[in-house]
Length: 90
Image (cartoon, rainbow, N blue to C red; front, side):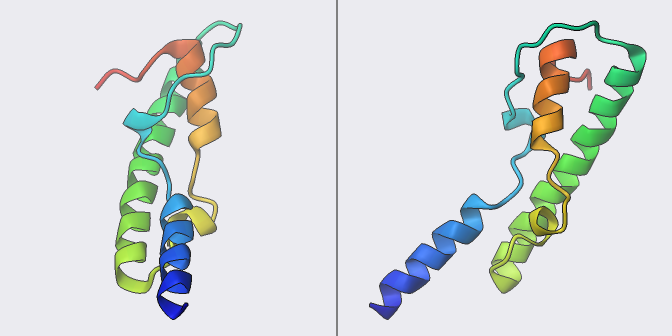
C-alpha cells in the first residue's frame, strides 16, 4: 500500500510540471499577430523553457515541480500566441 501511495504521488508531481514550449500546440484564434505579440511569445518561450527545466530538477531533487507551483507556467498564453502568430522563429 505504501508503494502504491508513493507511485501515485510521483505521478501527480510529474503531471504538474511545466510543458516545454515546443510541445505546446497553438490554439486557433482570430486576431492579427502584432510585433508585440511576437516579442511576448519569444519572452514567454524562454521563461517556459526555464520553468520546464526547473520543474524537472525540482522533481528530481525534492519531488516537487517548484517552477509550476510558483506561477512560472505560461502554457495557456503561449498556446494563444502560437495560434495567432505561429511558432516563434529561432
